[in-house]
Image (tube, rainbow, N blue to C red; front, side):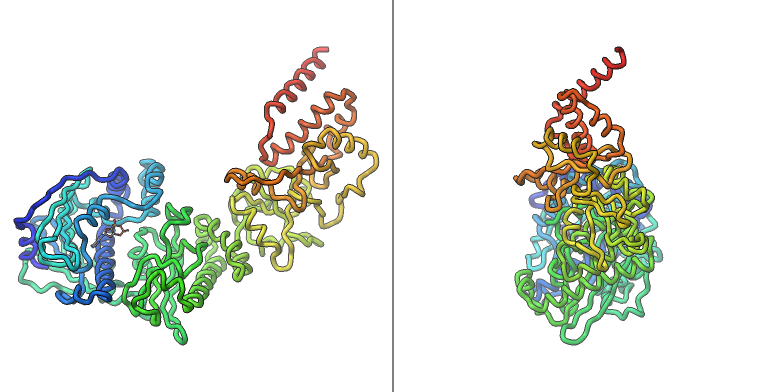
Length: 639
Ligand code: ADP
């Protein structure tokens, strides 16, 4: 683009309908945050604007499949970057799809992603932390305001008349103006009036290096021109070949990383990628990335997700979610198919039988990529697991075909872990199993603190038998679907009878020592409304009692989650287990006062429930009983 065209647009007569509008609150917050927290990364604005320009060209090429006349005039899609040292401006132009007045208002004055307001509430003002958060959100057009104190967008939607152009202008504070203009070129030009301190960006050498870095992988030519010398030929800066179409051996890591950032608007490097060309019955190229950080809307299962779909190098759609299962929603990438029809739509994709095979192959690719990372780069895998482990667990529930492979990717916290870190694999667990141990023990609970201090694992801990400590929300479902690993069944130590590998301490109601029977029977009578049975426990060392669920009952965590979501579930009573070597049991046996015995039994049960994280159904009764007991103690000591 030369200066001539630039002047023509600015000098337009048609300024009808100039309006001043306010940014949506979240946009204002985003702008402030960008400017402050991304300052040390300021040159990324160029990547973002080039990415948007490339997307706009892609979208026009797609629209032209159905309406070829859109590309009749000015058919060579390109991106032009101009600089003007004197007026301290740079501009990024595309001749792509463009925006109408309403689209400009909708796209650049508002953010439509759901959950945005909540996301911004989490901002702290701590620059380093917030820079990471903004990465999760995705940087975009607004990054222009890191270096510019005024940004002008001029655009004309493809297919609209010259006088249907629109001009948007803002200082990035709280407002913008929008007016109709006449614009001869199709597409969008963004002009940045650079802040005084950012003059370096009009230096052609600096610009050339940056543009090369940010645009070499883009399939459109990027041309650089000096706006002060309108007669000069613009110079081509990039190789204009889409990255995934090039042979793997010719692409270096930095190029892969840059392409990821272009694709995802993330500014952190990805953890891993996998680039493959498949030939034969189905022909396609895929380039899949594992990000390092979770996006802010990872838990919104409705949030847009999926790959960027191309057919024979023509962009077809963003977020084609049909090519990967929901539990791999964190994967970013491109799929370029040689044999899907160019007019493929989301609806057609849903019915296309070719899809199933591609989806299965891509799923395997991601799993293999993760497997490789887990084996070769434990540090990266740890990062991956911290960001996406809980999502991957959904795969164990949803994808029975890949269950075994996925099980190898799981990481748990266990009694072997140092902290609450999820750092143990099931294979690690198997390698540490005790002689004669046939089961993989686990305990479910609401928090790591509850499970790691739970009475249920005292005996196992004492014997040095590892227990997996499961406190993620999805874990009850996970163990419901993962019944065994490498032939070893998983066993919940919070339910049913506990069998220890050495047989020692295995006590069933039948093998219970006779001397304790009268006490247990008496307790059972007192507690019959609240418990299924009272048994002697094989689990306990230090605690007096614990409750366990019946073999067929729902795990208490699962019950609480389901009840919280409004489901009505049939009542089920737990089994109370007693530690017969605990002094409290002796105390119970010696109690002659009926009322006090009743109170004590209930308190022992209430404590067992509290220890596993089950809220008391009648806390006031518990408090009354406790108070009576405390008063008794007071009386005894003053007697
Ligand atoms: P993102 O690109 O992540 O969606 P941006 O804030 O960068 O976020 O852009 C918001 C929207 O504005 C884009 O999705 C696109 O619809 C529109 N947009 C931005 N730049 C252009 C452009 N050069 N041409 C056409 N549309 C654009």
